[in-house]
Image 1 (cartoon, rainbow, N blue to C red):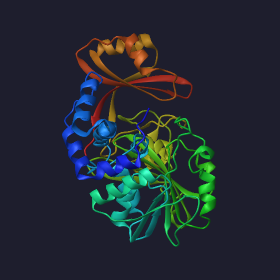
Image 2 (tube, rainbow, N blue to C red):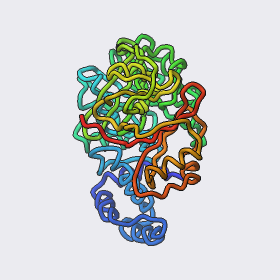
Image 3 (cartoon, helix red, strand yellow):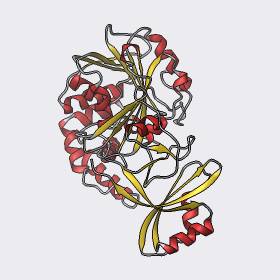
Image 4 (cartoon, rainbow, N blue to C red):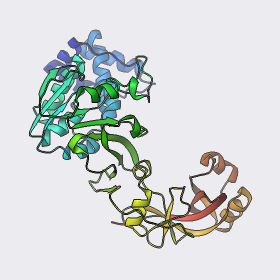
Length: 392
């Protein structure tokens, strides 16, 4: 059960005494084995009535390190941190709104607000939850930005001539994840109805069906370091294409493909390389557009794998060493022939559990390889490959 912060907790954590307590507890192990000792130490440092808030904050700050840059002194709730956009993703979205007047109507603890305030002409943040709003005020100050903050219901417009940014909560009253837009908080259709004719940006989970948001002229799928992080819906004058995939890396590199690009590619026999497009490209339905950009073609028109004689720059691609019809007996023989012991298995279009298959194959050689399993037409096919990171 997540700890429920009180207003008094926030006042304490933001005070000099609270900051000292957080610093003193920052080095505690906070593992299952040290739980009793950690709690005793925290109570000794800051008293029994504040120990839980301090320990929860220390743990959440540790979790935030890999997600939010510069958030070492921030305040969080567990749910708010889980839903917060990674800094690189939030900054990418904010850049589209640079120079505009922006109102984040579900600002929560301020992860998106910090990035928006850094590039917007004027920035407002609001939320119904007074605890999260207090945390946002603290976090924005720590980040060196000063948006206007107010307690307000996202469904009751409180600003004019601003771009509306929202990130509806996607958990029900029992804390279970929900996928139905009508169960979001606030509900997706009510949010759109509250801002008719306005430029509207709504962050959603990657699996959302854009058909549930007919007001959205554009859906952008965004991945970070190979993991699809969000689908973002753009309405009003913000939509410039129907579908967009943006691929971000922690090293700052990024690229985008849209449905405005050509998508004329063929289907043919395997080339020297197989390319598994980034998940954002696949979810955005832009595999053919991506393939056309780099002169690739499809193995099967219904499967997302691409193939060609030269892979795109900056991706992990698979050089084909051997291929043929797939069955476990022949694949086991191929692995022995190539002396494969460390095996990566990628699957599209076949009902195969890679981990279960690897256990059955029992590879025991000295080399490393990747197996790409798919179907071409109705025939299952196996490709033994050598994975390689293609330089930019």
